[in-house]
Image (cartoon, rainbow, N blue to C red; front, side, top):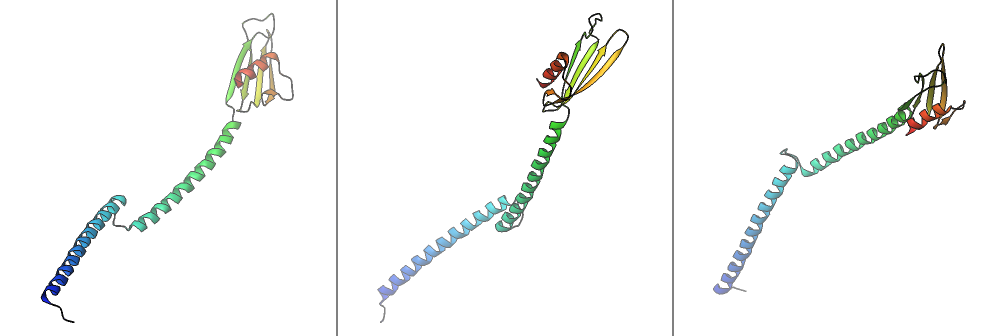
Length: 160
């Protein structure tokens, strides 16, 4: 089978067209690859690193961050429990405990934690004496000894 000049010309023209399409595809691929490399350089902040290596590094850093955050959440929970048991509520009441003595010389102070547990201290002043009373409070109520109205008022104010 021999080709005539016209057939050989068509084949050459077809081969040239295919070569031209292949060249255009190669140029387009090179341009596309250059864009991807530029985007990769921007992503990895100018470091010469492979995108896969960068992703593995990011995953490692993310795991470290998650570990640190987990420890911080645990520590905050522990500290919150400690804070709830610390004395943080207080109220002071001044009053006349004895009818003949004026000037509101007697005092009651309630010192409680976040749950309303703590102590009530009352200092009763007379003309020639002073008495000091300490009572426990559990969850906003009297502990082992009943509270006086003034002590109850101090606890209520501290809880408010």
